[in-house]
Image 1: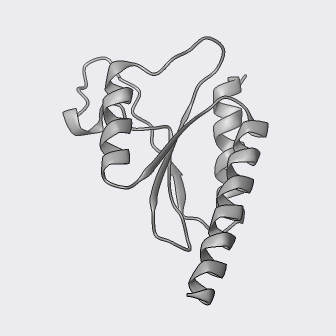
Image 2 (image 1 turned 135 degrees about the vertical axis):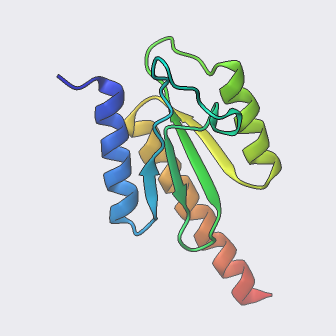
Length: 116
């Protein structure tokens, strides 16, 4: 049986890909006997490229009382510092709201450029 996190991750990936965004699951779960490169620690569950801007975006899936750990907080800070985008998502409804807001912002930016 799949976890709620896995199901949510798959739904978001399908949605992003249906919209034409290159998107993939970034699996960085530790495996006994293997080490994770320092640069990979904290990377979000979903990485995608916003198709109209080329912006690097990441989504960290969290469920219940789960919170970002220090490596995830540090990685989020690095992504934001590099003008990328990073969100913590807990439900598909929250993700849909995010996409709606992003679409509205992009449409506004296009109109602004046309009027400049």
